[in-house]
Image 1 (cartoon, rainbow, N blue to C red):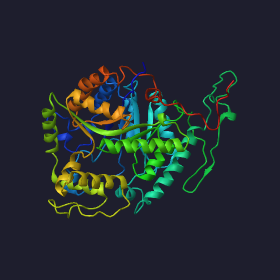
Image 2: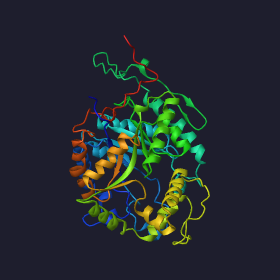
Image 3: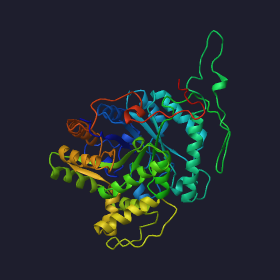
Image 4: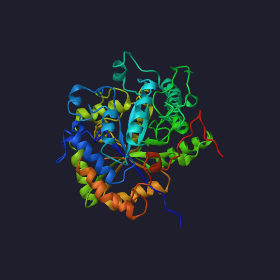
Length: 445
């Protein structure tokens, strides 16, 4: 009898919760974003729950929203990801450590070196979330007046990926011989100078650090536009997906995995993990009451600001009780805009309703008992709508503890989630192969 498909679970820590009311919920830690003691406890709890990865999203600017909304948002600031994840690597043993690295405002050499360092420090648990930053205020922090166009950002990202992975392959796995008697530290014949000169980037190399433990840190990607899907099909090993309707999720899953086959990649070597807010109660009604209480903590100023960000268009002048007007395309995230329009049409929401939904969290949510939540997760898994989920906790520590202590045992009882880690590295735990070094392939004897 074959083993049932296994859920993969990441924890979306932004750095602790994406919901803008989370920090105000009774019993929550309002200072969690900058309290390392709390963050260390969260990471250790996630590891006890056998989570695959601690996923740290990042921003390169204070969120672009009006000050009246900004002053109420706990997602406005957070630790720099590499600093925090390096510290968490020292107090954990198995959980993956995934950080955002922008292909728009960073340089490939910096990205390659930071992730290689994190992979070595953690013993092979690093992951790189490739993003093409779309926040217009981020451009101003890097001496630019505006972003590259959407298509250009993705074209640069594709070249950026080639350069970073090429830099990770600068040395053969056995290049560092460290022969004390002969006084030879590494073999020069096992070092490759990249010498990349492309449309967007010029990088000589080699990288001044040994090849990462995993060969390459795990590649994570989150774009849902056509360009984002194609980039995922060509490069990604984990996709942080969005959406709330299972039938649409199945289409996305089939589309991206189908594109992988067309470019010669094994679809099993990509794990699609939609973000999912999970609220646990002793009954479905209690869980819904918790969600309603949480959403009630979101101020309308934050709600309309969240809608503006999602649309890439200022929504502050919209009639709160009227329908969402026609929204022209912009240079912001196209998939975010499309999801809002689709949700508004599907549920016939007015501006106030859609804003309030987005002001808290407007995506996929499982709200119920451990059993009903497991039912829904299992349906997504077995019907190939996802390979697992990137869990968003409604408030911490209670929301995290509820999931680990109540939902995880139910998933384990059903045989769809691990009771122990399969290996030591993030790749081993996700069931992903270690990539060959393109410049120093293994010799098959």
